[in-house]
Image (cartoon, rainbow, N blue to C red):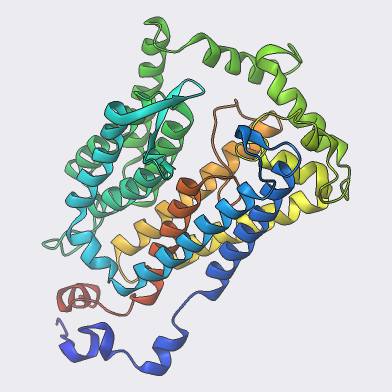
Amino acid sequence: MIKRRRKKDFGDFESLDKEKRAVRFDFILFFLALAVSSFGVLMIYSATRETLPGGVTDPQYYLKRQAIWLAAGIVICIAVQFINYRKIQRYWWLIFIIGISFLAAVSLFGYEVHGSKSWIDLKFFTIQPSEFSKVFMVISLAAVMSKWKGEKVYQVTFKKVAISSTVALIFVILVLLEPDYGTALMYFIAYLGLLFLSGANFLYLLSILGLTAGGFFIALKAGLIKQYQLDRILVFLKPDVSSEGAGYNLYQSKLAIGSGDFLGKGLFLGKQTNLSYVPAHHTDFIFSVIGEELGFLGAVLVLLVLGVIVWRCFYIASNSSDSFGMLLSSGIGFIILSQVVINIGMTIGLMPIIGIPLPFLSSGGSSLISMFLGIGLVENVYIWKEVRKDYEIAYQELK
């Protein structure tokens, strides 16, 4: 027998008990994200106060800018809490259109940085659309893979796999056209993670991996992968091949991290950092600055904090009251996890250098705001998990 709950019990946010609503917020997740981001502002200042990258003259320029982006990210994170995430699921197609429009706009209005046309200049500031679109992709995939209204039992059919694969492929292709292979890899990992957690047949996963590998070799034979990108793969496979040219970045990064020993040289005292030996030390190689100045201990503490943030995302996902909330929180967790693994891996030689920022820590407004948007969505799943529609409750109680 299917039991029905009264609408007033679960109908809207106002029906929740005020005392419960006051504590229904994952303070651990939010404050850890805030703490590591604030720490990132400090490390960015340490990395830029002497070197002044980009031709700026104010030693506090990057500190002030990152602090502003952090404030904006916090505001967005809090603002997201006022919308029930199930309403976001209802309009996933609109979010999908916005996401691919962002990426398509890059080809029309973007400008090139380090070989990739990934940025749009808005006069007062620049944005990297692919950073925001990763969150939009996760929302779209979670909506497609989750339980549809007419389903009594959640299941991942071929139709869901086909639609989700098409959605992910569109996002990945638009990023590859920039070209930004690092971000495309991050998108792909997040999609595979969601497909696995959704309970898709293992053959689907193998088929997608096989097609992806085939596509890579076709692109390699067709000359679509540029020489400098092949050089980065060569350096990854043979890290001792050269300390100059393609191997310079990795060599200097490993030298900086290794010179930090256990406790580091001290804040603001990193020689490799202050003398600009490590390229992009305030963006992609911010972990090198942490390793040099704060040593092994500081690097491990940063990893622990980032690890707990990822764990909280998956913990909230596991306690979600519906499949969309589970997949949405998990997708954000996979995004953060993949970025951490790729970024730190490339600074110590375990991954090719493919230009992925370290979440919450690397300099850049697009990356930081998109991370807090993702954290806001995970918090939203936690806050609104008790507010469910009658038909969702009925199906869960169907024996």
